[in-house]
Figure 1: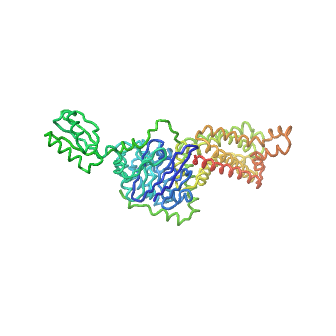
Figure 2 (figure 1 turned 135 degrees about the vertical axis):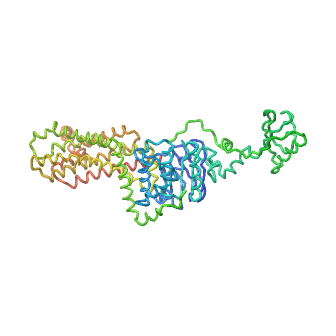
Length: 321
Length: 267
């Protein structure tokens, strides 16, 4: 549904987006990750036709966004960053306005408005003016606007920003459910969201894609992936460290420390070790030494670690429109 | 969740009605929203009250309407371009700067509407708002008709000229409003441009210019002015040249609005 090829956007001499390519098919939820100022919003603004790309090509359902903007825009629902809305309108008035611009009139308009209000839990504030709403409601009002015409493509820029944990959960499950029938791209900097809602994730840094894969695949890029943490009773820390280093399946001992009455250690498998071999040798070690094993756990790798290791922290103030 | 209540395929709605219908529909939808926006805020009521009070003051106190002893509305209409000078930019300054300040412009321009439909819809809404304010001056017409026997054709022309002047100023405000997200800056720039449009052809100024500038230059500058075109209408004449002047000012300014908006989006 969404096809982005070699997208470039230059603001003056600065390249905000630099050669980004990806596709999103129906049934996919793509998480768009990256530090602030990495080019997430700029990419989304180009996909939705708000700003033209400097070069590259975007097609939505086969329609080029630059050459055929109106047809492409019809297929898209868009939640811009910070969820803007006409603050002088009521929730109902705003959603009706959005529905009419989407070509819905009369009964089909009212039906679409009701459906969107129901999905976003807005019934209780339907006649309230938007400037009197709390941030969560305002956010969901703008979100309702993006799904009012039941679009095939949803572009959501930080859809859970400013929501409380319950609302975040609601929005994530809504995204996941809708993702079964639509092509969805959403940006976030909350990594747990990627696990909660995405089928695939892209990490973007300084305008370039630095990682692209399922959340599982991304986690495996972590140094921690495959590491084993154990907790045993019996040995001292130096004893355990010596024994662990003598094992051929261990490449590196990350730490050994006292943990209450027990000792805790984490080791990285050597590259030659087969799947499960490290766990096996650790278990044998415990049996041989007649220690008592309290815990033996294989680490999955953590997304935030991957994120930190492949993106460069941007401490310099970046210009953002 | 009930996705089964999927909206009866909006693509087919658009196909049935054709692109032309949907363009008109979009303009109307945008205009309707904008116009409702005026009346849900105090702006509309403050504007209308001030407009009517000032017009009354200038017509009766400064223009000496009764002392003139004429069954005409000249003393009434002659103040319009001056009043519009401040009041129209006050109405028009929020047109685009407000959209940019609230970031709703991102919402509006990612809808399946063209920038021209949005510009036209917003312009027509605020023009209609000014027309409502102007319409509320109808007691003046009743007064004159009661006291004497005015030429109703001339009164109609006077209103038409006034409305067109307001439209020309408004299109300029639309342009300056697209320039900046600061409404005060937008207001000041459009007042200056509108002031130029009045003064360039206002008799006291042209009389002064004639003394040292060549006639062709004075004529050239004066041809930019709304004043002579406005005056023709006040004499009860509808001249196609005057109509074309006002239409050109509006088309040019709205076109420039579009160019400015496009350049913002290009970054």
